[in-house]
Image 1: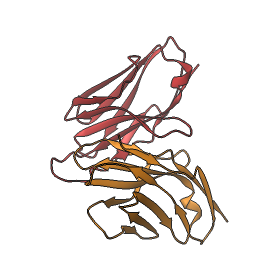
Image 2: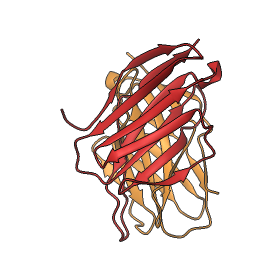
Image 3: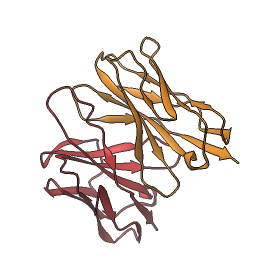
Length: 116
Length: 114
C-alpha cells in the first residue's frame, strides 16, 4: 500500500448505527486530518492530529469521535448520525516541520457515507 | 480568518486549448502558501502545484502554471494544451506559514470537450 488509504470506500448506515472509518498513511508523516466534503461547499476541516495529539476540533458535533492510536492510523467513530451528515469524508496527512515549510497535505480516496 | 474564494463553479475548455481558473483569498498574513489540488471523478485528490508567498516567481509544473498576484490576493491556475484527463474538480487552498490548517475554496468543476 502506498500513500493514504481509507476504508471502507462506501458506507450506508442508519441513524442508530455505530460505525468507524479508518485511515492509514504510509508516508511517514506526523500529522493527520479529517475533512468533510459536501456538494458545492468548501472542504470542512473536522479534526487535526499532530504527533498523535488532537490540536484542533472545529466545533464538530460529538456524534463524530476521532481516534489516533499512532502516527500512521486515524479513525473516525460515528454514532447516531443525521441524514445531513451524508458526505464524502476525506483523510489527509502531512509532515509537520517547525520551520517555514509548505507542509502540503496528501489525501486518501475518501469514504462516501450515506445516512438513512 | 482566512477565506478562499473560487468564483467559477464550472468551467469548460476545448481539448488542446488553454483555460484559467480563478482564486482569490483573504489574509492578513505575509507568510503563507497557496495550492491547487485536482480531484478527478471518484478518484483521489492530488496536489497540482504550490506557490510560496515569499517567492515572486510564478510556479510552473509542465502544462500547469499559476499567476500569483500577492497585492491583489489572487492565485489563478492556467492549464495549457488541455487534455481529457484534466477534467476534474479543482480546489484552491491556502495555508498560513505558522500553522497546519489549510483553507479550501468551494472548487471549480472543469470539463474538457473533445
